[in-house]
Length: 133
Image (tube, rainbow, N blue to C red; front, side, top):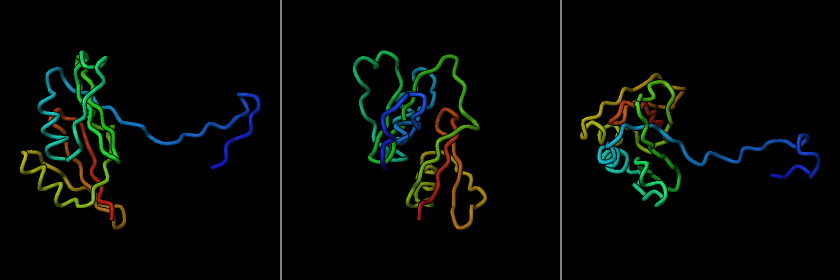
């Protein structure tokens, strides 16, 4: 992609290059539940937060494709409408894995041939899982 030529700052075009990460809220003390869900069930690796952020609580989960951070919020209110949509290669496998961990997924109306479902993390945050085929 070509960059806009240098010129007056207000004349330049803004270009969004990508999405670096998504952050969801969690209640204080929920780190173990978050790790069991995001790393254990969804397979997004738990990674250490930078040392200067540890005192804030929360957890980070990252893979080559996804960076999802959970930050402590008080008072906590789960995101019930706004949500990240995660691409998965096998929706049935993910739904089965969630069920084995006590989490229900609800299949949603298809978009053409695309299958997707919704579930909640242990804190009530909504997630969408979309099968990528």
